[in-house]
Length: 112
Image (cartoon, rainbow, N blue to C red; front, side, top):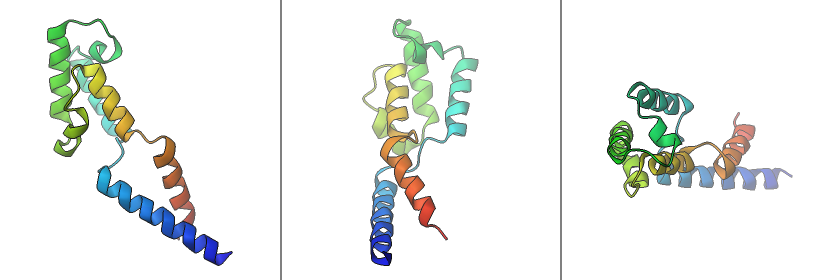
């Protein structure tokens, strides 16, 4: 049993190392909250929520999103043509769901 647990711990640690190399961190809810409120304050949040928005306002919202993210995250959104696409790319890349969430839960079980 101990051997199985040790193998699982090693596997989780290897996955954590791979995730650390490929993605800097999950998009923290506080950061997401701040970014959303910045866009709301600028009157641009509707560009993220809706498909049919004024092109000029959408480009302004996209620029603000690009300026608010870390430079290492810009690769994820560099091909986005709209604010909605950029937001979705960031959400999919950094939101704490799916495999990433499971790995974090498993690793928390083995921390002493």
